[in-house]
Length: 415
Image (tube, rainbow, N blue to C red):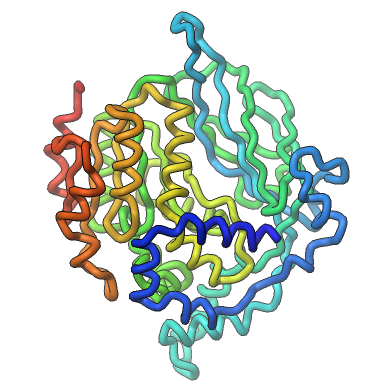
């Protein structure tokens, strides 16, 4: 039911640009041939039915360390803006957790072989095929493991208090705002782990603290800072399940420069489902400043849903998440970075028009090196002019080489 709801919502939010892009690369044909990795029927009946009650579920129970696990996702603590400026508000943050059954994924060998074939790893090619299949199997695991709805976990907050997160709903995730009574300064980082840390295989969550004023960066991930090849279904499968995660040349150095100038709060935005959280978190920590990742709250137990997540309704999703960031930090100066493969220009343009002056600069990477991408449409000057209608010319800039941006970034210092 939840899977059908997620797909229906994405379909309703699909733009004309999404439709053209998906049609030009025939995403549907690839999606039809991708295997299912699990079934909601494998979730116990009581948990499955009661999960519709969400946070008020009376039948929910704690995570069982023997059979279940929970991911605690990094977040950003902020002070709500009070109507009376003299009143300093306490810290709070959105705590998000995802619950899974341990080692319950179906046998993925057929799925691994199917993806290997699609990616051109020839059967019988020996070590190369074996190595590729091992990588694919490892990265498929978060998609194959059965989610665990109707579960909660207790965590120990930085001030020593114990807080219950959950229970998770239909997608086995929970999001709730938690007040933090401990004293912290802008830029501080703390860790929060489960009372029973053995249930958190990814370790504790990281919370960064951001005062109301200062700088923040909102950065797309796919094809902005990481090679993902989003216009191509096979490109997405290759860069997600087989290839070594690769940063866009020059972007790590640019982000290091931005960090040195402004010490901003970082938000990384992707239309990927939260199944990719460990994969993307490891990549960002290896190449970019640490920050909060915003991923789609949908766990797909089939790979066609994964491709849909990345290519359908992304503009509406990104606008919604950026609106939440604005609610948290409306007085921050914002630097937005995205690319031309999807709807980043349109989403950032809409945000500027609604919150004029909040984004101080918008940089869009003109992607020219992805096979199958309609570069004439995606990179047309008319497209950018339309997306940034009523946005001052000195606010947005399209670039191909990150070295083009250093002067514009340096000019923001002191503004």
